[in-house]
Image (tube, rainbow, N blue to C red):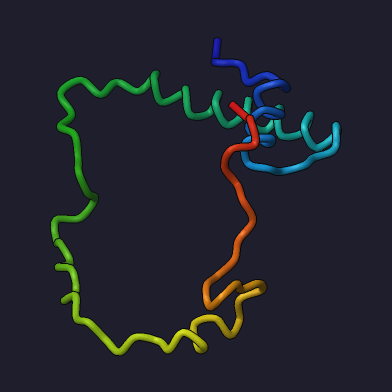
Length: 101
């Protein structure tokens, strides 16, 4: 028996993500999420006794590149493709504080 994702949970996540879906889409997503969860829960059936945990697949570690400062963009250049700007800054819609829990 796998964890069951309900229609209401899909609707709540969509609301939190500020996404709008039709009833048919919500039903479809609910079904798809339940299939995904059932598939992932099959991993519980794998016998991992004596298997050491892995942090990465390969043994070779790629070192991080040097963090070298480069010339900054001029504000006008940085803002040239912004859909909305206010007083020389990017302007974005408010996404916090609409009462959604």
